[in-house]
Length: 526
Image (tube, rainbow, N blue to C red; front, side, top):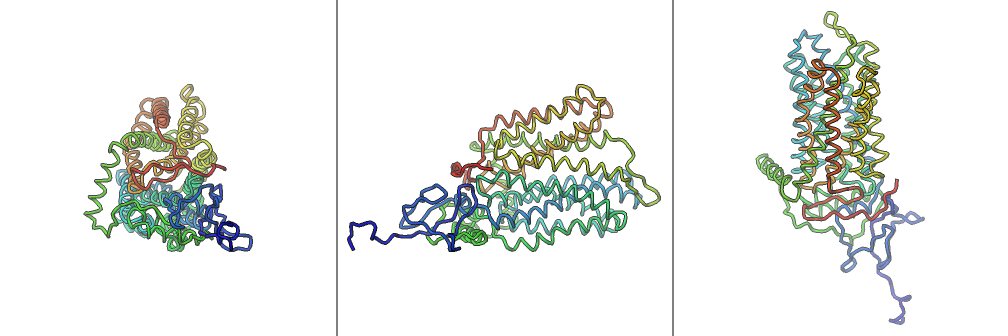
């Protein structure tokens, strides 16, 4: 053998993560064997691997990009989607059950309002509370608690013998309705950069479809099983959630920050195995030089959450947080405002309380279906444009479309309001869907869930004024004043989106604040 003949030298082989240019995994040869690549050969992902003695050093985002989409992501989307469908249906059920129990138990209007208020207070706190827990104990671990509280709350409400029992159950239902946003972060952290926008927004579609399905289930179930049976039936999707959740590892991004790169690598190998991608022994993750934390007490979690709150307004993130909060107030306030205004505008009788039985007309159920369809329309529109147009331009387009939708009513409030209000609700929900993807992408792993929770919390706090705008002003001044407020909020949202200094489409997720996100090396195809 000649030492100078490269053709006769044995080539070192380094197993690589399988990856294709569009984020899908292509890890096998034609005979079904795991693919490996010669040292010096450029892998299909287009990146020449860094190596030290045959090793590749990757960030978690790069590893997720190379693994690509596969059975793991599909299964995780199904699990989270089932949960969101159930919670979307329960949100509608909470509004529907309040007048039913008021009639059945002879409650005062004040007690009925208290039920709705407790649900709202739960929704106000849920995103922040579960966000803090998620950044402390992990995404998957937290979602077990979210799912358990969801089932306990709605089954407890279905079995409630009195309003004193029903009230805390409504609070728990509200808590989960926004606490389920932990699942968004969990899914986003395992999606390839080039596909994160579209597939992340697709996770909002089950919620919209759940509101539709909830109206259909109510139509079929309430006359036969009463509101109790209706609430119990809406837990059926959680059978799938509890069956699928044990199959998934904890978020690799979270483990890289809290448990060390070895635990994160173990999670990525499980993901790769489910996707049919072989991770070679030479693959290593970058060390973030973060402390490995042990189990925390509740006091430690509170202290850490307060410290993390301070980091959201620290110098590196101050501008990002200001823009994020303006976007959340605009989207959440506008969405809640149109929900209340729609109920005020349509003043036809939709039901009647006879004795201790509340009867809903078919017209009422049809209206529920029509209004609920607006969320699905908004979600589908975002799926079509979020990766193509980017996050910022999608937000600007949705907020501008909201102004255009209300313009005819501002000019002539006497015309039919249905189309304008349904379109406005669709685009307001679409803007909210974009924010569910955009906000987690703007922040590093250690405060990602907290940032999303704070955004929803502040948006919900701003929405405390929605009843005044949509009810009091409408009754005292007519349709134009609330429409003008909704338009002003939409303009504020468009300006905030334009002022955002960062477009995250195609970027890897930050694991540490000082880390600069790397641009996606894959083309952003459809």
